Image (cartoon, rainbow, N blue to C red; front, top):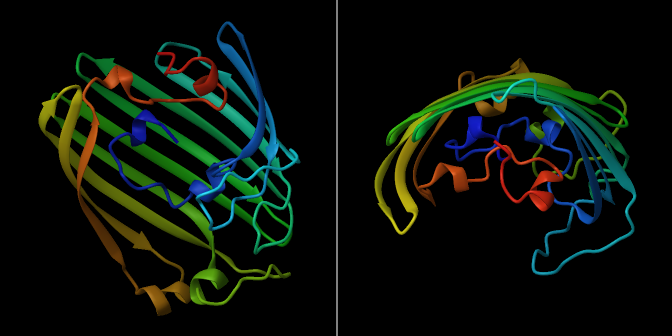
Amino acid sequence: MHRASAAENPAAPLAHHILDSTHIANSVLAVRIDRGRFSVEGSSFRGREPDDRHYDVEFGRPDSWAARVWFRPTSTWTLQASHGFLDEPEQLEPGDQRRTSGSASWLKRRGSGFTAVTMAIGRNRRVFSTLNALLFEATHRRRSMTAYARAERLQVETGVLLFPFVVHKPHPGELADPVTAVTVGGTRDIFAWHGLALSAGGDVTTYALPPLLQVTHGTRPWSFHVFLRVARSNLDRRMFDMTMAGQATHGHAQR
């Protein structure tokens, strides 16, 4: 989640349900092995997403697993491939899920700025359907100005979007249609104070939808953000390019 290429974009990709192993995991057992340019991570955890009572901590026996291989051929490139098995992750959607992802990231620092690019693919295989996603995003920061962009194409659960107030029950022949989203935006730092920076930003997103969703969402929908953000002014102290086990064992990005 803490990609440098998405550092300035306040919105998660539409494809994050396909690219993420899981949103919140409990009862996690993780291990990591580093060998030169390669790293291997593995974990076992409770795959069920938490309920809507967020004031407690849910425990349970680990019943799911995930594995990831990292390869860093140079100081600027990072490649990864991962696969995870989730045991009944959704309370309202019975069935196990298998999630597979691959990505290539490039990050170049230049003084107080940087340029970061990520390409990622993902697949979420469920009982009655398989969802695929392709993501490209980039961020360029120079002094107090930042520009960012994101393009993604993914398959969505058409029936869920057409009937949002009906509890979805998986069934054979589920509809999965492609959606394309393109975002362009930027931020500007206003002032810094005690290691924190206040920034103002905004972006615009346009969408291309399948015919069925054009009935409910329009033929050419678009959206926008206008926001203020507080973040660490020192880029080296931000959570750039965190890994599954690296956050617990290293505490900050390795490069």
